[in-house]
Every structure is written in C-alpha cells, then in structure tokens.
Image 1: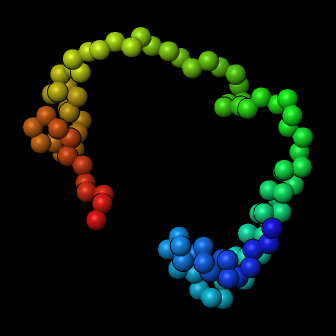
Image 2 (image 1 turned 90 degrees about the vertical axis):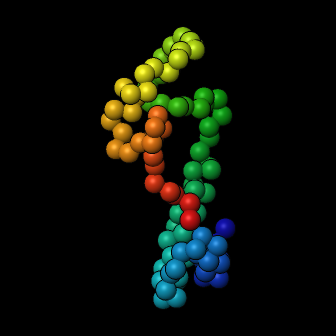
Image 3 (image 1 turned 90 degrees about the horizontal axis):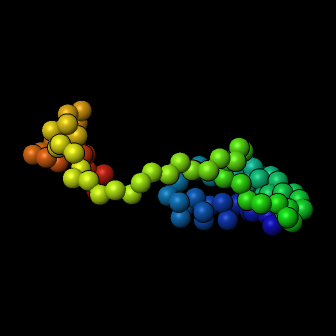
Length: 95
C-alpha cells in the first residue's frame, strides 16, 4: 500500500492537523516507510504464539469485592485543590 500526497493532505484535514504544503511529500515518504515496516511484520509466522499482556507472566492481584460506605468525605477530599461541599471541583474540559 502506498500513500500519496493527496492521501496525507486528506488525513491531515480529517485529523485537523495543519501541515504546510511543502512538508506533505516528506510525510508521505515517512508514512510509506512505516507501512512497509508493518508489511514486514505481517510476514512473521505467529501461529501457536499466545497473545501477551506482559513480558512476565503474573496473575493480576485480586481483592474481595466488598461494598463499603465510601469512607469519610472529609478524609477523601482532604488533598483536593478545590471542592464544593463533598464533591471535587474539576476544570471544564469541553468547550
């Protein structure tokens, strides 16, 4: 699969990334290099290889699923930079 400048321009527009026209050719070459590396990885025989979540096999530590009252709100909120009553105040992240 080859990626041309028109494809890079379209993907940049869809991702809302402003790239100058003179950099599009270089980006196309870099993306083509990445795609050829991925094609090389597809040639590796992985039949019989179990998927890994870690380099070292360790079971996830489990704890009892116990319902609690949630603790004392004063203790829970003691390190909070801002609070309103018994709630955390966080900055607005959606415009």
